[in-house]
Length: 255
Image (cartoon, rainbow, N blue to C red; front, side, top):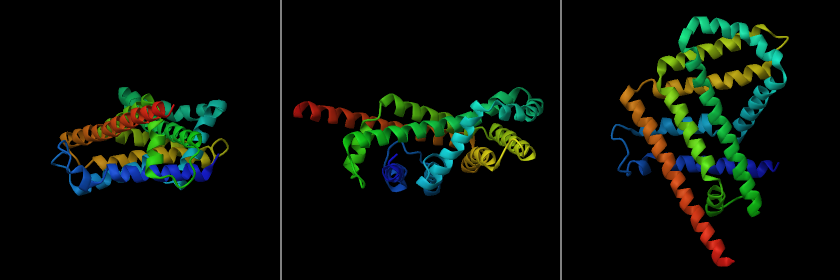
């Protein structure tokens, strides 16, 4: 893997997120909610940058955590070791337990989509033969090569995550369940090591940050935030699709 290229692409995309969630730019949009303040946009942007599209250093940490979670598939004993705790959680939270788990899965799925997105972005850069540092035009050419379905999936997963974060009560239950899982791990030192703790702790951190982001808003304001995130990301998708068509026309002319 070309680590230098990978890290450069991650940082370049983070710069684009800063542009997409810049208050001075967004406030000119006719669909920008009047209730949004500079603080609202800044906190939203920081949530993206800190939790969903973090720096290369933190991305390596996330990748290691995901590899650890994936290892559970080949090591069923680790899953069985948690069942006692999960059974207790089912009794504690009752019929809302499955919904609480779905909140955790939404966070996991968003991270997985982001990883696939980054992998495809790097593939495009390598196919073009681009070298670090990429210009904005080169970077946008790479973005335009991403399958529209993949970007749509990323937006859908992002929307699901934000919808999950709006249910403050359910979010708190999910955090409590994951904290219980973490405690169970720490008590079973023969089966779970620090790397297992880190994997679960990262999931908890995302949800805690999400709670801090949205808990101070009422239901209507939360809905506005979710709707605007979807709207803003969809606008970016439409821009990339137009860019893709433009690139195809240029290739046809050259051939």
